[in-house]
Image (cartoon, rainbow, N blue to C red):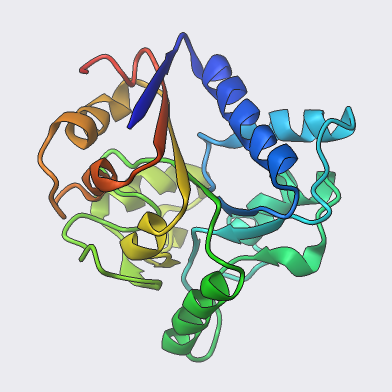
Length: 241
């Protein structure tokens, strides 16, 4: 695991942008596993800037998102479909047919999960997977006690995750309690992983992920077993290392 400690969020985002841009340049038909939330927003802004400066081209890129809230409509402003379109897809030249996000309103969720697994396999796997980390150590929406062999599945969100996500919703009752998420096995099969973290509130999870035991109680700890992980964190997130 390679650890890059930056001064602040802006530098973290810049470093992440450089790595993602390099992947796109070196392999123009890359499969990128993408994440949502506030942490990768700076990286997405950087990628848009590089695209506008004609430094990178997304026309052959395929994207596969980690997760989506269960039961939420794609056009809902809090859905990850909406987030990705707003923060990246609408501002670059990606082929819309190559964008993949779990269909949270699918009639048969179990079938949708299996189809998502088949999709990942059909495109040859994920070349580079972007991750954030929850305060409880979750990656994607794989909450504590998740089985490491799990593939795409329906998840009951942890109380701490629901509370953390409530800041994005006007009413706490509207915060989804479930999500569809890639499983730990999907994530671990990615060829390269870039995990981003910023802020003092992530410091304990980062410490346990890097220095603690490998345990389902802290899902991110399994990344210790992956052969190519780059951890980009600011000083506050790294403060306990």
